[in-house]
Length: 167
Image (cartoon, rainbow, N blue to C red):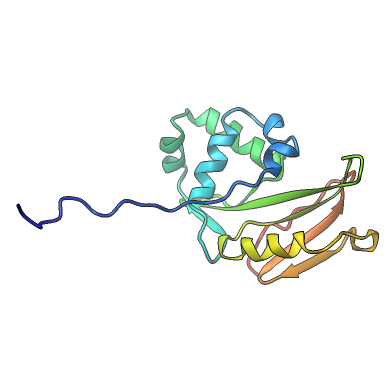
């Protein structure tokens, strides 16, 4: 028997998908291939910066779809506020956005928070959001938790998304 390695250790990375993508209805509104693209882009998000830099060719291969289907899926993600295309070159730079709805006692959405998905910051952001009750005076404001800017908007208003552009 030999102790010579025959393979490299497996890749075991992972990322979170918040329940809100389903609960908010975003999944139901998006193109069928958009969920696959969302997963593929999110897989490439840098742990510290929150940017995903990945070529369209790599995403096309990961999804197993045609170019027109890829662009339809990407447009669907953009229209639902789940991604922003920062630089459309090769590789393309994406920002993935998280959106969390707040409900009143009757389960009617009253507000939402929108923020850039930065894996290294996500647990702190979620912990902070869970520990504070939302008040009316917070609507329309931006709160910063760590390196993440969180926009708090009225659920009836359409949110302008912080596109995560470098300052």
